[in-house]
Amino acid sequence: QVQLVESGGGLVQPGGSLRLSCAASGTILRIYTMGWHRQAPGKQRELVATITSLGSTNYEDSVKGRFTISRDNAKNTVYLQMNSLKPEDTAVYYCNADVFWSGGYRGSYWGQGTQVTVSS
Image (cartoon, rainbow, N blue to C red; front, side):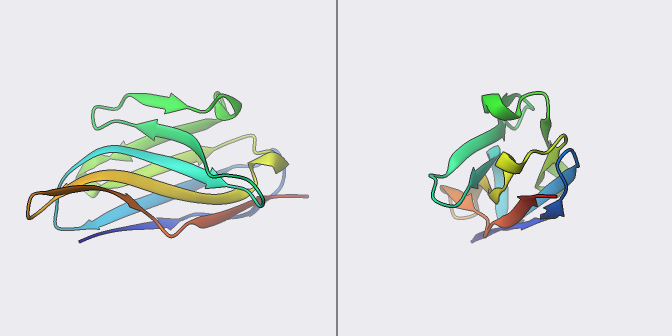
């Protein structure tokens, strides 16, 4: 089995920064694309950023230039550095990973979510 555990959320003022982390654990053989999604109250979950196992990244337009996704393959961990935060970034942030694990299974796994609130 595979588990993803996020950390790093919290309350921050507009213009501030936060760094989210998401660590994958279990009998993992390989992790392909990892990503961050978010869901604001009353809205659908949306993709924020993704990163492939080779480090290629993709960002949602509203976060380009402010957010940076990275990963440490040795630690099975993905990060999201969020700078210049805006109130509209307020949401629950979820990490996601495409994982191949022991037994020959491959699947998409989600973390439990971490709340990010941007408010003065």
